[in-house]
Length: 248
Length: 270
Image (cartoon, rainbow over all chains, first blue to last red):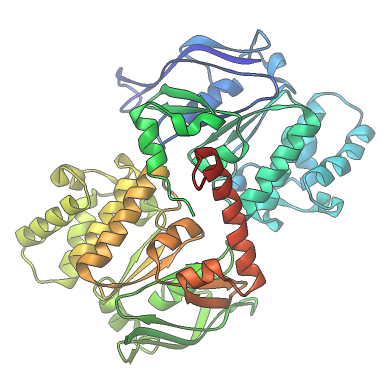
């Protein structure tokens, strides 16, 4: 469904006037199937977030294409309502002058639906993410990290997208809250039949929710593995990654 | 074992709103042991540690006794306490990027700190710093010292702070979420360095974390905090295997849920 085909990306190195370029992604191809949860695991600096931004279409690749159902994501109309995102930094994800209601309405407004219909929908959405509907008039600074992340998820599912990209969405939450959010994501997936692209450095969280994981290193795919076969990974790097895990 | 640090009836409150952040907390740190403080965000772990170092912002007031080697450091003047910071009590922070001065190379920061506490010549300080950096697996120490913080990765900066602690040989190291901002591999390496550090200089340690996996690996004793209160404390294994308080049980069970699923996939414990 979401297809990344031979994508390459580089950024300018050493300031504005330098011609030197640092290659972030080298010839990456992958596919996220319909109703699948695909994990992308990598260290910091491996280029996984850049890949995420390309998949969302908010940055253009140097070469290669990203397609949703065969259409290029660079086109705004293709993206609209089809792909959503939830980011790590929950403090900066919501406009501080917006109430919870306004924040969730933001993507719905663009879709030209009637206002009445939208307002009704907010109550359902808030209940689905486990928040009382009295939260609709609160501002983001009044909420805890886990609650803001739930609002972000509510905003992401409001347009009933085909795919949600979660870029380290749970990494800055407490472990006890992480579990709650992961459970919520599992439930929502059942209701909405969406795909997830779950970008993280936390293998245990990825193992909790993903069907298939991609191990990413230095801008390249090191290995793709079904989650049940995670223990049979072959590459040296993937083995090292699993070995250095601190379990409980 | 003798207590190196005793905290008695520590209270921290906000002067403006009068809100109590830490309520009457008392605990001891035994010489040579590692005490972990766990709890969710907003439970007052960091404030407790900053209260010991007296690094809280000026809008927070504190009272109570903090007895370090028989001396009440809560009564000391700011100037006297400053001599103790670094040499006796060393703090390692969560985010290396903000802990170092971004406007100068890392080496300047290190040299400044060492010059404050020791009368070593410039050369001697450098030699000691280099050997410490090599011992925490930082190859090319000279090159690293001439780099700015933004040129180094989070894991490297964290290890530089540990190297500095090795040279300073403090009595107590306070580590405030030192591994939270790191990815899996660097986290593993940094935790290993912490264990080595304790073995080498035999210091006591206060380790704040919300990751119970790391805590279980490193700590001898655990304090569980919730809403500014200490709700349970004791030996690490005892807390994790037979927690008495509901909240501790809840924390342990959520962490177990994550781990057990992973272990099942990996085919462990079969």
